[in-house]
Structures are given as structure tokens and as C-alpha cells.
Length: 179
Image (cartoon, rainbow, N blue to C red; front, side, top):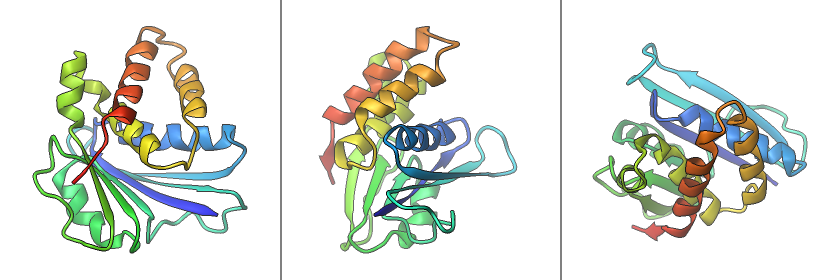
């Protein structure tokens, strides 16, 4: 089975990192993966999104046009990608920055106040890890163990960031609410 995911937000929110961590964790879980980044013209503050596929079988095409899962970190991302989510799919949204829920009744919407929670942890940059934790808590696409191993590998050059990212991930997993 293949799971198609779109992750979207502003540049600088760690959108690409979420996608990379899911893809790397999928590889550790012995699955086939693809990860395709897409950037707006600006580096920070512009739009950024990536498509990730995690599959038990070889991936024929890396294009995600109807994702089962959307992770939206801001209003423009929800506005742009919500309609593409397959019926029965899941939208995980950063309800700290997104004032509305999904307008669709055929999908499940999970709201997580990622920015507020990151502020409580004392590091606003870990909002993406909180959302990734929510993703892990809601889906079984990749294992938490593999994501943790991947965090250790990605942040190996900055070991002081491993602990706060791990805490944020666990915080997100335990703080899921359906809206």
C-alpha cells in the first residue's frame, strides 16, 4: 500500500525537514519512498511544500495529485491543498496559525496548536516537530522509532538540537485533538 502526503507552509517553518524525516524513516522501515520539494520564489516567508510517498511496493511515479494526508502549517496551505485530499483522507493542521477547520465533511481534520506548544517548550522553531509528532500519533505510515533514529542522524552535527526536537515530537504525539 502507498501513502501519499503533501506537507505545506511558509518557507522557514521546516516543511522540507518534515518531509525528509518521513522519507528517511520510511527507508529505515524498509519501504520505498519518494520526496519532492517545491519552493516559492522567496526563501523565508514564501510558500513551500513537498510531496512524500511511502509505499510497500516500488513507486511508479512520484507525483502526488490526490494525497491521503495533508499537513498544513498555515492558511494559504489549507486553502490551496484541502480540495485535493482524497475522500476519507486526513488533514493535520497547525491550529495556532489556521483559524478555520476543513470545509469538507468527507475527511478527518486534526488540529494541533503547534506554535503555541512550541512556545511553551521555549523554542518556536520546533512547531514542525510537534506537527510531525501529531502525524505519527494519527497514522502508522512510518514508525516513531525510525523517526527518532532519523532525528539523531539529521541533527548529528548539532547534538544540542536532538533533545528539544525529540521532546517536541513526543509532545505532538500526545496532544492530538480532532476539530
